[in-house]
Image (cartoon, rainbow, N blue to C red; front, side, top):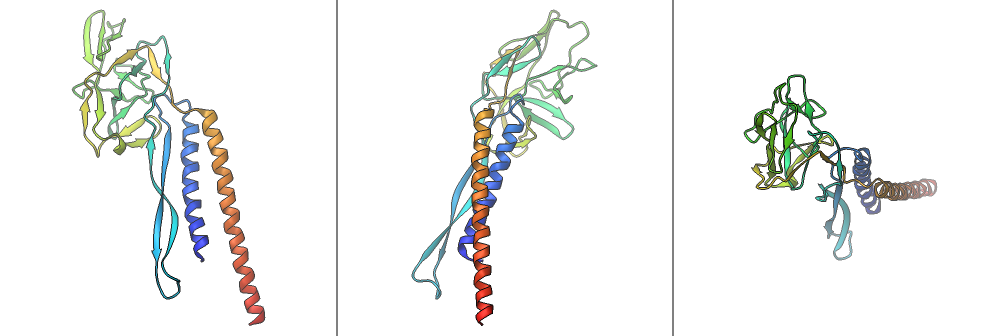
Length: 245
């Protein structure tokens, strides 16, 4: 293949990745606590020097470096559920899953059959000591203070565990709600700023993402047409050489 084709292919692969990320954002437009994902591209330079080149030449390939989460939180939606919780800080709630503890900002919680505070998937919300939080049948009026203290008319129940990753960029997303911090340590948030009766909505702006998807699709189609045109040009050149050879 010629250099033009390989460079275009690198752009095509990067563009496909960008479309996948944008599609994921659109799919999670209604996921509580979801933060918009963005791509980070860079140029990959290849310096050439040899008998078949005149002087030095540099080829510039598109490189998919990484993806990152927009740190801007989503808007708050106020509800009547006393176990709907939002965070005014950069911290995360911790829930217990079958794969181990996971971090989340999706604060839609409720009571399980045994009184355990769980999320939509049935994962138990953990307290500051890493234990599941459980309310008794007699606890009917639940309140949560800004520092995470869960209490009822019968007194304190537990302090909700809120943590902040030392390196948020190393969090591994698992679906639209959970993040795995197994490869990075976490530290307790000094001021969790828990808000009761509210949920942090997704930070995705659907109109912006749909417009972005259309732009990425057009660029993908343009690069595909370019590669197809290069393929036709090379094939025509081969046919002429064989015909006159």
